[in-house]
Amino acid sequence: MQPEIAKGDILQRVAGLSFIVGAIVTGVFNVLYPRADDPSQMQQVLTKLADNETLSKLTFLALTLGMWLILAGMAGLYRSLSTGSAAAWARLGFYAVVVATLVWTVNGAIGVAATGAAANWQAALGSPVQATAYSVAASLGAASNALFTMFVIVEWALIASWNDNRFA
Image 1 (spheres, rainbow, N blue to C red):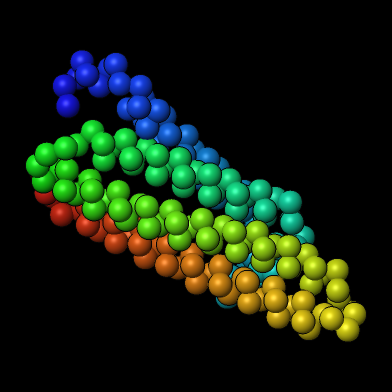
Image 2: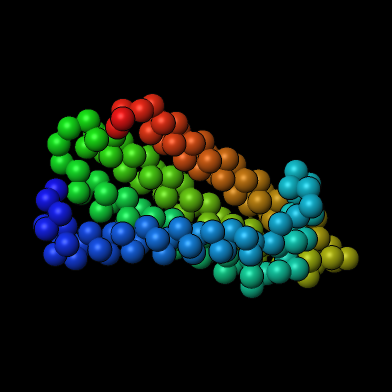
């Protein structure tokens, strides 16, 4: 694409801004996310989510927003490359980011539900429904963990596909 064409293209500016803002939002809210000391201990994870219910839900939503902004930035990159091997790799990358963003969106929705279920479990401590509330929260937490693992696999596959010096 000619530099003078890119200067006047508002979609490219929006895409670039989306990349930057998406990365910042994702980074900031990833740091703010309440984490358990041992993520393999579901009870610790659920307790941490329940203790910080509002922040947990906010971080899941903000991380999802950040991923969608990164997807918008990737769409601009995909749109700007139309020919050659770079365009083929941009297409592959765009499709991988679409899949990863969709996986993360479902993960975020399940994470918000798991946070609510964890808060319900904490409220039910000592009551007859405590075991049921824990089972629901733990199931949603496990589903969220599994989707996060899938998200990481897709993202790392994307990064690995770009690291083969095709652009050198």
